[in-house]
Length: 286
Image 1 (cartoon, rainbow, N blue to C red):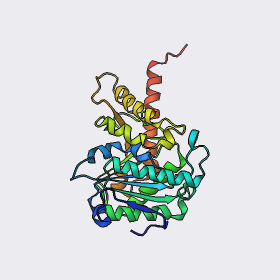
Image 2 (cartoon, one colour):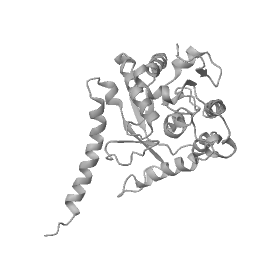
Image 3 (spheres, rainbow, N blue to C red):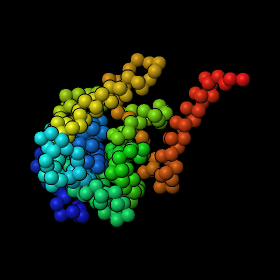
Image 4 (spheres, rainbow, N blue to C red):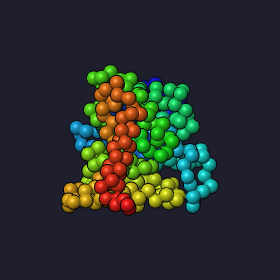
């Protein structure tokens, strides 16, 4: 693969040759920051864990230099934080038995400048080399600008692939905005209840964040359990833990679909469901 940054890295936890490693990946996560995939793509990590038929591949787009920091990490420079975050991501890859970890090492500013096409070129290179069956990335209703830049760039990159090389499923997963608001029929409800110990350990690897002022470990497990309990109001829980995603597969299968209209159609259905509730139960005074 020809990647833009000379300090971009490809890490193979089991030491296999890179071409062989890339070809075996079946589930690929495309995340903005170190720890995003451990939070949002655990469904794929768990499905591939200790399997020899399925392999999880991780792509982290940014260098982590702009991460928030507090406590013992408060004095870290951006360069020191970036180096630490990259090491933490490699530890997660080892712990999670990933098939490969690619760190593209772009700044957040570079990722958000989508007009350059630099990130898209890198993602096309990775996708062509891997040709995964399933892709996990951010959801297009996220509120984090870097996450939005990644998901829209990922969609553009996926649409550049020949139709036969495109993944079967593409999930836009919640992180910096939950997807509970989506109509239940539209949600991709991913069961993430298996291997809870592994899930907690993967997030715990990121001590620079957890001990540095952001309790992603508690928040992530809480959201998973909350999603499962509040998913269905008139049924018992079918799963212990769920992570919600927007199914982006139609946008990858059919280039004629308008991306903004597809995404906003989910918002429109949510608005209609709220309007129906108001019209049915709000008693108008004469």
